[in-house]
Image 1: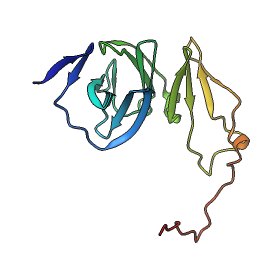
Image 2: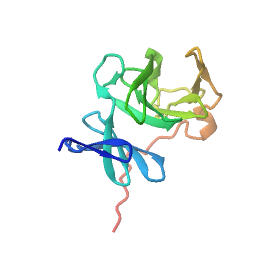
Image 3: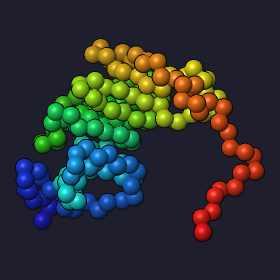
Image 4: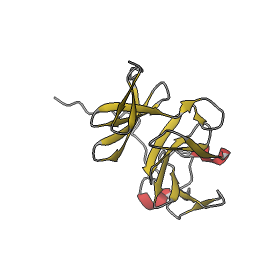
Length: 171
């Protein structure tokens, strides 16, 4: 059968899982799995419960989800490529809203804590300044505010691999 009802969730049994891109643990027994076909799937106790949202460029859609989190019965999905944060109800998978900001494409990760949205740059490029800000908060008016965490504070500025470096080999 295409769909089954199990513990207040609709269980989708037809879509096979493709290669993994990311996993977000959202509770002791629950996780979101991002696959290479740009789907975000909810698993509870090892079972695929449902796919959250849908692919596309329209309202409530995403093309390249990179991170997500759950808070107060809502699931928030961040699409780095579109610079878009979209959210749905977790129980019914109903689209609730979105924010699209081109400047969000610079971030690799998103978290929501106590109603506040945070975006993080996780990749350091050699061309980046040591004073480049890493962590930003989005205010109610969707303005990004730097929180004063810089690459130089982490001690990773100027790190380079030796030219002739060989990967470690384990025996």
